[in-house]
Image (cartoon, one colour):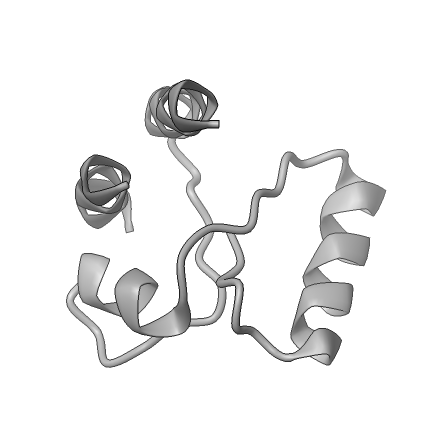
Length: 77
């Protein structure tokens, strides 16, 4: 999983400990716009990966990074 967080840090998902309201909000937005969404790690790990204190959600806008992350997540499942 550390390899995935490293990749996220290069790009700038929702954390497993995000509030139910946050998860619902982003799940609905992603479903409406047909955007893939995964839940991974916790807020501290996501924040640390992008050099911030903590983050409940982050978006990966680069398709290449997004596909690489999805590939790594699939390998660890």
